[in-house]
Length: 266
Image (tube, rainbow, N blue to C red; front, side, top):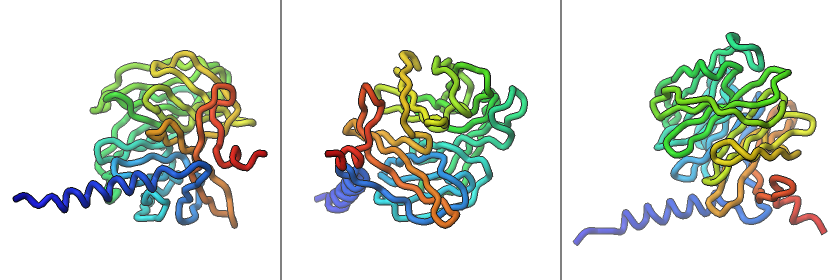
C-alpha cells in the first residue's frame, strides 16, 4: 500500500500557505524589517511566499510577512514577478526617463527558494529604463520609465527565452516617470504610476480600453484568486522604509477601493 500521508500533509501545508496569504477583508500583511530604500514591487510565488524588492535589497517572506531571506542587489532593482520557481526582476543600471540610449535595461533572475542568482537577460528595447514586469500566458511584459513630453506608455513583450516580440502602446496620457508596477489578474492589466496624485491604469489584456484613476498602486500589485488585489504601501519610519500589503477590490468608478478604509467608513 502506498503511504499517502506525506502527500496529504504537503497539500494541507500548501493550502494553509495560500489561506494565510489571502487576508480577510480589511486585513494587512506587514513585511518584516526596515530598509534603506523604498519598495519597488511585490509578487507571490507558487508556494504562497512573497517577494519584496526594496531597490537594492531583495526580500523573501512567508505568506504572513515573516522574513525568510534577504540579499543585497544592484540598484536599481524594480518591480518583479514569479514564474515556475524563479523570481524575475526588472533592472535598470543606467538612467531613467531619458531619451533612448541612456538606459541600461535588464531582467535579473533568481531561484525562488534561496534567492540564488541564476542569469540576467538584456532587454535593450526598454529604452527609457526597465522598472517593472509581469507574466501572462507564456510571455513576459516589461514596463518602465518615460521622458516628459510623451503622452503614451509602453509595454515590451518577450517570450520565455527573452526574445523580443513586440512593443505595445498604452494610450494613457503622460504619467510621471512612466509605469512603476504591473500585474495581470487573469482578465485585465493593473499598472501603478507615480504623480501628484498617483495614477492607476487599468487596461484589457491587449492594453486597450485604458482607464485612468487617482489611486496609489505604485509600490506593488498582487492579484488574488478571489478577484481582490493586494496593493503595497511604503512609508518612512526613523529614516528607514517599511512596507505592507492591503486588500483592495476593483471598482469601476474609483479603480480600486482599499477594504481597510472602506471598513472604517460609516
